[in-house]
Length: 91
Image (cartoon, rainbow, N blue to C red):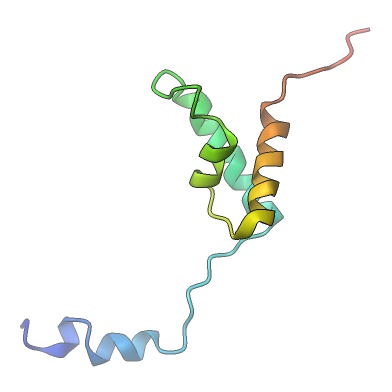
């Protein structure tokens, strides 16, 4: 069967994927969801993670798919929002 090109990524697979571009979706909502999931994972596994590396801006950028420095800046800003200490007025 290995000599049959239909089973080894030959013509059949090229025809199947012709004209279909795989484009991961990004956008503010998707990035914010990714950062929230990253922070939740960091909190859930804090016993195993070093606080020097997680949650950090670099860690979030490695964990959340993004394109370019603009989206990386959005990820870092969202991480700061989610990890900032609460400053509620109790008066």
